[in-house]
Each structure stands twice: as C-alpha cells, then as structure tokens.
Length: 179
Image (cartoon, rainbow, N blue to C red; front, top):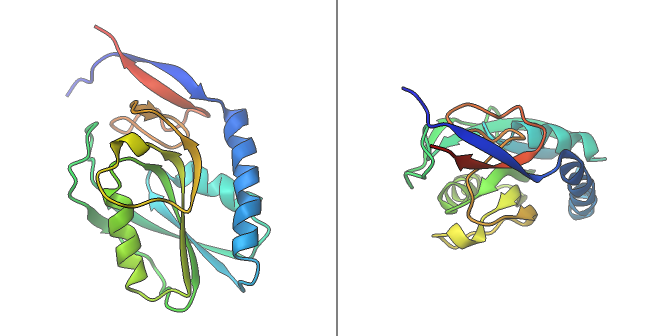
C-alpha cells in the first residue's frame, strides 16, 4: 500500500517540548508529593518518547508500565472503537497512577482507559496528555495536565506517527499532503 506524499511543517519545537515537560513535572511532583511510588502508565505507542522524557524529569520514585490501546490502526481518523492490545503487568489497586497519553483527540481512548483503570481502584488516578485537540472532542473527558493545546491538524513526531512513520522526529510537526 502506498501512502500519499506529504511534507511536515514544524509546529512545536523540541526545545519548547522540553521546557513544557520540565514545568509539568513540577506540577506532577506537587500532586504526588506524598506517594511512596508513582505508577506511570504510558499508552503505547505514541507516548513512548513523552513518557521517557517525563519520568526523567520527575523527582519521585516511579514505576513504569504500559497499556496499548488502539482506535486508529494505520488511518488518520479514529474508529471510535477502543481495543486494549496490551494490558498492565502489575496491579494498581491502592496505588497512585499517572496515565500518560500522546494526544487527546476525540477523547474515546482516554475515557475508555481512565474508566478501565479507575475500576481497578487506584488510590489516586491522574492523567497527562502532551497534546490536546479540544475542538475534536466527542466525549466528556479532560486530562489533568496538557502540554499543548493544538488546532485540528494531523500531527506527527515526538513518538506520534502516520502509518508507523515519523515517530523519530524530535519535534511536533503538522502534516501537509501534496499532489
């Protein structure tokens, strides 16, 4: 299958992302200052770069786990059907949990994951998203922290892909399709 040709225009620089993560980590540390160990749950695959940078900034004892949820496949539009492809390795009952998402778009994935994890009775459950596309929201869900509010653009980079490409870009870029 061939993909359409496109160019990528930088929207958010690597330097801006790093500065924002530093500021967010201070807020997260304040929220979880009493924890004995924070379970940081990355939503694969798009959040892997964000979670790595975020946990390096946190001055807290952390445990990292991953959950893989899918509602996109290789497409550009959410199917709105959320499937759990990989679950957590350890239990979270009674524990402090931070869910890390790359982007909250329609909100279906975040709402599903927070409901699933909330049913497991964590002590505290919070969420953070690197990117927030509020104009695309279809369900009532908000991350507790957002890195950047962005317009309704298709973006790649910093772990976010288009058909498994462009995850390795150090910045967030807007995809522009060309003829």
